[in-house]
Image (cartoon, rainbow, N blue to C red; front, side, top):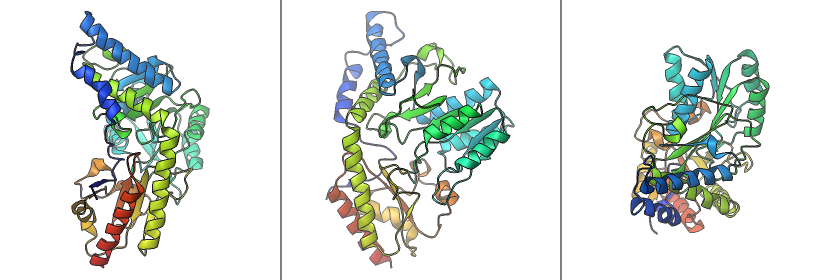
Amino acid sequence: MHRVYFDNAATTPIDKAVLEAMMPLFEENFGNPSSIHSHGRTVKTAIERARKTVAGLLNTSPAEIFFTSGGTEADNTAIRCSIEEYGITHAITSPVEHHAVLHTLEYLAKKGKIRISLVNLDEKGHIDLNHLEELLRENPKTLVSLMHGNNEIGNLLDLEKVGALCEDYGAIFHSDTVQTMGHYKHDLQQLNMNFLVGAAHKFHGPKGVGFLYMNANSKIHPFIHGGAQERNMRGGTENVYGIVGLAKALEIAYSGMEEHHKHIQHLKTYMIGKLQQSIEGVSFNGDCANADRSLYTVLNVSFPASDDSDMMLFNLDINKISASGGSACSSGSNIGSHVLTAIGGDPNRPAVRFSFSKYNTIEEVDFVVSKLTELLKVEA
């Protein structure tokens, strides 16, 4: 068996068609998009065509799409600039958000700019919408920042319900949709939100490029100054190759979304069943069994405790299996997963996040489960 890659929530392999779309920008179309001559205009046209593609897929206006270096920059822009622009003094988020959100809000709170309220989670790790409404009722002038799909356990948020609550209480709503972009359709005419974030490398596009959707009524100042690029919203020469690749990747994702959803959900469901049959005491973190409330690309598994629990990921790696112990952004950290801690995970049980893409197969799942069974028998 070749090396198995089950860490697609960290990053996905680039689609060959995406790379092909990018290549002319590396070669003959090399101009600076800010230049007014023909070389520059050609590249500027490519950027605007990409913007129109992304906007069309999300059912919004191209004027509401701003390209960034990735999800983290887009999150920081939405959070920091909206707080400053609107004089927001209170933010509502959850203890299971990505660190791009949590660390940004914690920094602003440390500086005395805002207070933070953490919304409660239910027994499966979902956002308690009743508690969210209580917090909104008690705190006017609020920013709500809640992710659509959790990057570690895969729980999904009902964007429509949260958007409606924010509208009722006059709150600003920002959602990090990095894990769900390209895997679910986001109709921005149907969602009441001020800011939405995506990153190309999570849906088979290139790394180092993302975008921020900013509702036309949500005017904020730039986060990065230094030029008039992105209609004066982000200084710096655009990552043209990445932008074109992002648009192509999202286009491909939307065109094959139903087929890929069915294929990947089957892999996840199959792996759950195989693990339950093969490994006594295995359990699953989050709400993975509920297909309507769980991201179909992510499966977070807790294995029985053993003396070699800390070696689980290493042992998988030397057995040709790439997986993660949680958010890839925390790799190498000995702090552990803040998400699993928040939902009451047992720190003595090794947890592994397996995440799938359209390129994975049933044969790979069988191989991984077989290796896990061997490893756990050796460790027992």
